Image (cartoon, rainbow, N blue to C red; front, side, top):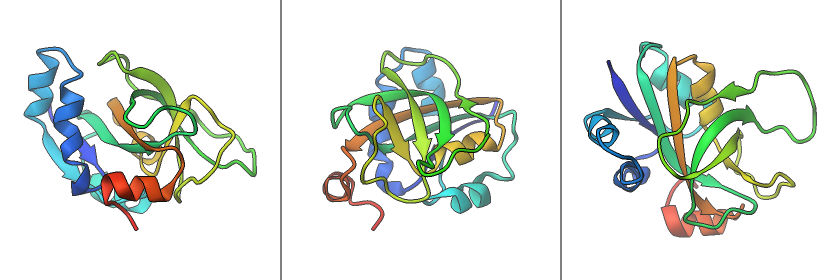
Length: 164
């Protein structure tokens, strides 16, 4: 079976070994052998980078995320991906993410098209890619997010040196 680790930016590379350390064998070694794909940030980059992958591939998204209340440095195993649109309500699917791989905190991930600087949502994380990955329909999708900030672009930059 093909396995891919999906990351937005090369600057997230350091997270792979840390995420794999959360797993037990043999999963750790299986993922260590996976091909890493850097997509670029956001939905358009996700679609362009992943559109030709087999939907039967097993995919693990590892990346940074913000949270209103989880401590910086917390690992979150995502259980569900949703889009974040706090100003309107409309019907859309809530995309389930594969089950337990680690002992990390489990939570929903809200995907955004911009950096989230404030939110009333608690006990969740915010990113800019996962819902788009999930919407592509991979049969086996997992996600581990490392809390890089508490909805502070400055704190995110200090830790990650990522997206401007």
